[in-house]
Image (cartoon, rainbow, N blue to C red; front, side, top):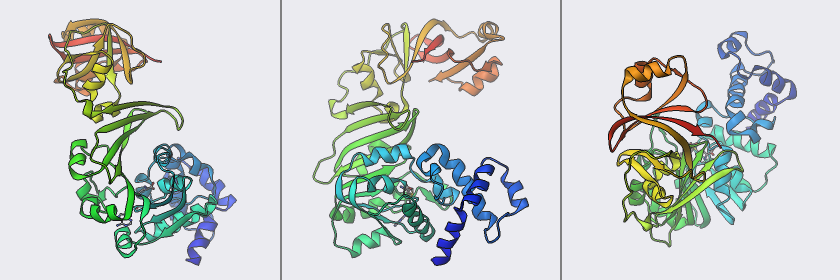
Length: 402
Ligand SMILES: C[S@@+](CC[C@H](N)C(=O)[O-])C[C@H]1O[C@@H](n2cnc3c(N)ncnc32)[C@H](O)[C@@H]1O
């Protein structure tokens, strides 16, 4: 343990840090060949710090800025929450005790520790525990206890009941990525009963690939689901569980641009779609709803809420003659709608840059690009290929950038 502390201390010395900073984004094989310029510091450790810094710059800027931080292996770093999503979760709790049963690199735990009196981090991997212990000291946090053990065993041995338990299960199994709860570690489905006994509330993070209907079947007490996107890419599904409650189908959708700036939509599936969305030919404006809304599966409900219609039952493009800037999604002003004649299109776009969208259409955008031999680019000009109620159409449109 002492030698590990020494190793971390050496790695974060100013001169070593300077070297690491200088070599961020440089060729790793070249660095390995040159070897470590510092006596008693392994080049492998230096390279790990370089890769860690590269990854942390965008995902974990607060960590990146702290020169004392030690990074775990690339694989562990890939599995961590980003600062934006960790901060989101921490805003949902304010209590005495929280147990994080899958501590990892401790990003979620770090933010939770700011909102609770005492935070218990449990983690199977001893190297991760050592790294986190060092980093917590570097950030000067003192309500953060670390236990290097199997969190399920820990729960079984202890009688304490936590205000909150949080789990972000490991979604890697023998090197392949998994997204079902039964394949993740720990297996929540097998241990739901003990988690229920030992917590008042439970927060579970699942993969964006995890099916929401499946979650309602596998879990109980679901109070809310949060679908969290960063820059319109769904990053995580959060299941907020209050054991005293029946499953409620309230879905909250957040799309973060920065830590503080985000759009928010809430849908209650209990308001169920009694009315089906109307279909129509393309109107003056087209709307492509945010990916979080598409993930919720309640996109038509949102469409109805904004008085939109759809181009075809299975074509996820919404339309209106009104320009509705508050819609959570991309907005296009339609210039023309025509049956598809590739020869004509090719001729019309020759020498121009264009963006392609394919919706419920037999060719995807790569195939369309090959067929049209066009140059992709430009800020606002789009050709949208889609199945509509009139048949396949190409829609020429301009993206309205807010
Ligand atoms: C997805 S990562 C968690 C990342 C973490 N939320 C963060 O922000 O850094 C999952 C972690 O759970 C740990 N783990 C899996 N099963 C465990 C168990 N039974 N007890 C304790 N830790 C476990 C894995 O070693 C892995 O580090």
